[in-house]
Image 1 (cartoon, helix red, strand yellow):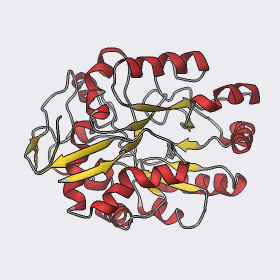
Image 2 (cartoon, one colour; image 1 turned 120 degrees about the vertical axis):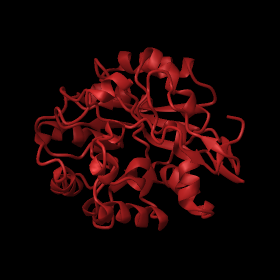
Image 3 (tube, rainbow, N blue to C red; image 1 turned 30 degrees about the horizontal axis):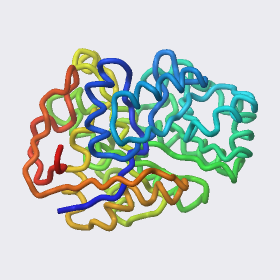
Length: 324
């Protein structure tokens, strides 16, 4: 048996409407809180939209704290002062780089005034760090942007979201204000799982899964218990119809804790740090405590959740979440 204290998903997509209602039980039954992404249509980029979305999440969940993000734009200081107590962070998407990011940032320098205000107010910055270059190079190329941001805003906490390459792992010890989230799919999969045999569109995400060298670097830093590395699923549901049309994102929520229990293989202290303690300490998160228990009973990942095909659909795991 594994007992986790207040697990937190530091990067989650819930969508809206029926899809939200279908997928959210797989989060609130396994996590005390989650950082919810704002790249909806229209984006969550003002207080009214934020409050409406948060209310929808709360109305469809139990014993769960949504940590809200807003979509980066050119906010005024008055807007950020008004938003500060309602958000965890502001999410920066380069324009057009991933799902629903067409209204994203075209030039980092354009939002420097916003970053100055965020640094002053103590609002963290969350970043989807990719360029528009060759797909396997996009994160590596973005490393220079992370380093520039870290130097130019030394008191701004910057989260490198869903890192998938060894180059970004190396940045964690170079800059005090850089942090990282790691997903289940980047921790376990490589490009072979996407295109090594028959094309598997259900393993397609952005950033794409990469080489064994990259995966191994992620596994090493996670198993080390590095205090700046936190779990963020980037669980991103799409209808099976849209996945077959090429939508980027894996819906990993149904398999996260069983899969991580097998990955940590008895190292429950490091599991606890990765799934909760590091995030709470790094960002001083005051989340109502919630105990989640995994028992050594077979769990079979669902084949479908509503219109969505989960990661590892049909796979058998040796751990299951108690009472779920």
